[in-house]
Image (cartoon, rainbow, N blue to C red; front, side):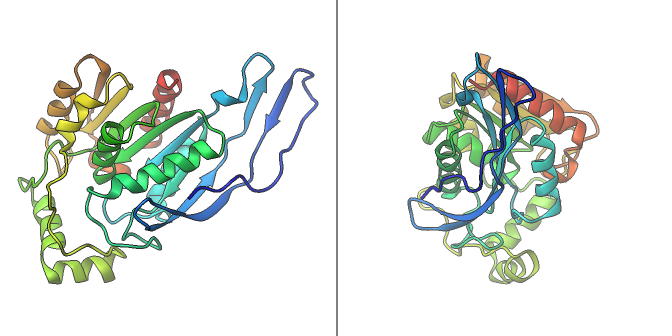
Length: 278
């Protein structure tokens, strides 16, 4: 389900051949094709349109947060604020996270959540859509681009390449959280994340197997060389699978996901997306 923009359009006559348009911010619940409600926020950018540049070129970022995140967490809001300097931004809470309905499937059916958010962005009039995902959200943007084409550029930050990775202590803790009843209780009450108790059946397409299907959509893979969750073989596998249509940034001193992505990196991501999308 998508909803139209609320509020009014403010016009300026300072420049005779330009129009400055700003939609009102909006918060709503979207509905996925399998019936899950998603807490979602749209923040419009202030874009100046020249008569020779149609409004259909307007850019929007759809941000997919990491596991145990949600739309109200400060690190998600900081990412949204940084990307808003380059275009409008849609953020949402994945199923089972925050105020969204359902239970987390840790990257499987979350592609339907992202598809609903992308459709909402399109319905608001944006022709250039860039999906930006962090950690679990990074795996989701890769799988979404392969299974539900609809993005004009894709950015995966701190994404895993393969499933069931337990090679680091943080990932062993994540597996305990997901697979053990007591872990799921901690997820529910400690992290506001409701995790589905069923195992994957079938096992979803892995991120590294999804990547070759994304071409020719531009793809950026970003990973820190101090990521405590996924070592550097993960981004290198993704980059190798992407061939000529992918780009890899290995960031010196960077840790994991949204918390480690500073404003300078987010500004570079915004610049990359603006130059590649559409």
